[in-house]
Amino acid sequence: MINLLPPQLKSDYRYARYNHRLFHWIIAFILATAGVVLMAIGGLIAMNNSIDRYNAQLASTQAHLTSQSFADTEKQVAAISNNLKLMVQVLSKEILFSKLLNRLGTITPANVILTNLSISQNQSAIDITAQTTGYNAATQLQVNLADPSNQIFSKADIVSISCATGSTIANPAYPCTATIRAQFTSSNPFLFINSAKSGGIS
Image (tube, rainbow, N blue to C red; front, side):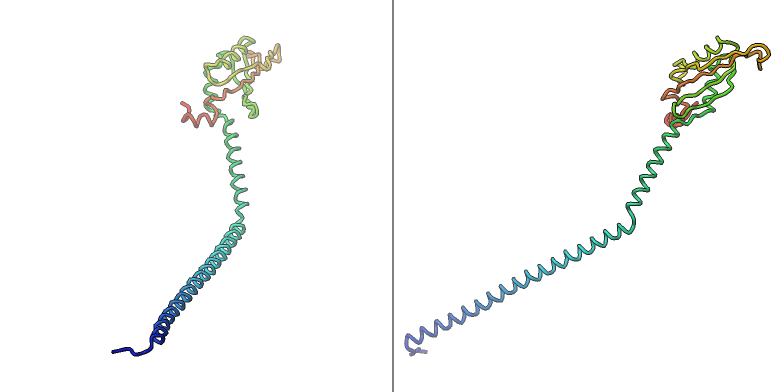
């Protein structure tokens, strides 16, 4: 087929086709750009919604924790801890008298009778009252109590020695009364805590 149209008209048709194609590309570009913008806006809206939702959850959680009075629970735990510490302090000074009396019996001289024991929790010491045949027996008791090989007392001091005479003697065989204050060693096995650590006393 022979195209008999003038050259100018043919050129106009050709450029018209180019312009039509270019218009389609411009429309596609505008639509793609609009899609990207819409997607970005949608993403921002979704992100803001997520932030608002997480903030609401955080506020709800904080309100729940406050309503559960966790501060009060923490105070109760602290009080229990303090009570446990106090119990340990008390037990650390608790004396196993049955074991202590056995040991005292082995170190008491034959001419001495133990009559009373009184303990001082604050000083970790014990006051021992005994009837003796005389001053020498009382001092021997003090020496035996202070002997480091016994592993009971770190020191023992005579508080008083008094001897009755005449008709005031209640027990003529033991006319003297001695009071000795003995200080426990920190590692002696007659404290409850030390006994528990060592697995008991034989």
